[in-house]
Length: 302
Ligand code: UTP
Figure 1 (cartoon, rainbow, N blue to C red):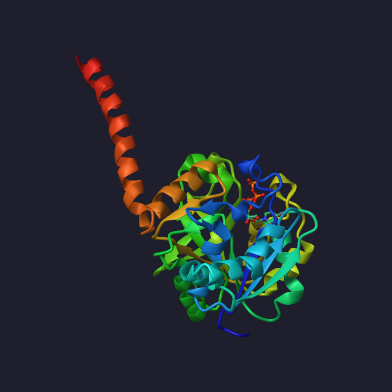
Figure 2: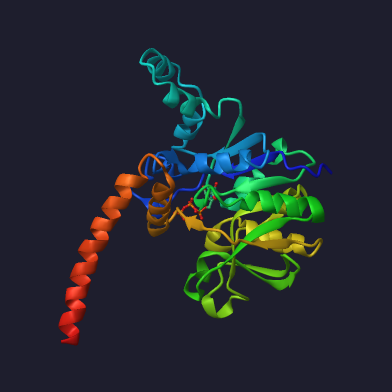
C-alpha cells in the first residue's frame, strides 16, 4: 500500500443543528472565521502537508462549498479592472487544487459519510478532516500525524484531553502511551461520564487505511441512530493496531457556538489586518468588564 498520504476527505454533510438557525439553508462549513470559511482553514492545513486531492462529502444546502472553491469569473474580472491584485491572488490561491464532491443523500452519520467516498479512494491511506474542528494554523497537527503514519503504517486518530463533563460529546479511548503515541485498546462513542474509559477524546483529524471501508459497509447505526466512525474503528481494532496522537496545540470546536467565538477571537488576534483595532476593542471590553467586576468585589469586601 502507498505510504504517502495524498488524499483528504472532508465530510461536510452534517445538519449543523447546534448552529441553527444559521445552518438552516447554509453550510456550517462556510461560516467565516474572521475572513475565511472554516472549511478553507481545513483545506489549507492539508495543503501544507502535501495533500493534493480533496474529496468533500456534501449534502443538501451545501452548494456554496462547491462555489467557494470554484473560479468566479465576474468577480475576478471586477477585481482585475479595479486593480485589486491582492484580493485577486487571495481568491485564486487554491485554484490549482483538485476538488471532487460526493453527495451523501441522507445524513446517516460520519461513518456513512466516509463510506460514500469508498469508490474514489483506492488502495491507499487517506486523511479525514472535520472542518468544524479548527486547528490553530500555526500548529502542524496533521503533518505530525502523517509523519507518524509513515513510520507505523497504522490508522491514527487525534486525541485531546477534555473535561469529564464533555466526554459524552465525543468518541473516547482507552490505552497506553508508547513513546510519543498512544496505543488504543478500546473506543467508546459518546459514553456517559461515569462509563468513559478516560478523558481522551477523538477529535476531527484521522489517518485511515482503506480496510475501514469493508467494516463501514456492514456497520449498523449506533449512538444517536447514526453510523458512527468510532464503532467501525472499534471493529477494526480487533484486526489491527490503531494509534492515537495526543494534540499539543490549540483546537476549537467551531461547530459549537462558544468554540466558534473562541476561534474567531484567537484567529482575529493573529490576523495582521484586524489585530490592531481588535486588540484595542478587547482592551475596551476588558476595562468595561474589569471595572464593573472590581466595583462589585470592592463592595463585597467592604
Ligand atoms: P457533527 O457531529 O458536528 O454533526 O459532525 P453536524 O450535523 O455537522 O452538527 P450538529 O452536531 O448537528 O450541530 C461531525 C462532522 O461530520 C460531518 C459533519 O459535516 C461534520 O464535519 N457529517 C456528520 C457528515 O458529513 N454526515 C453526517 O451524516 C454526519
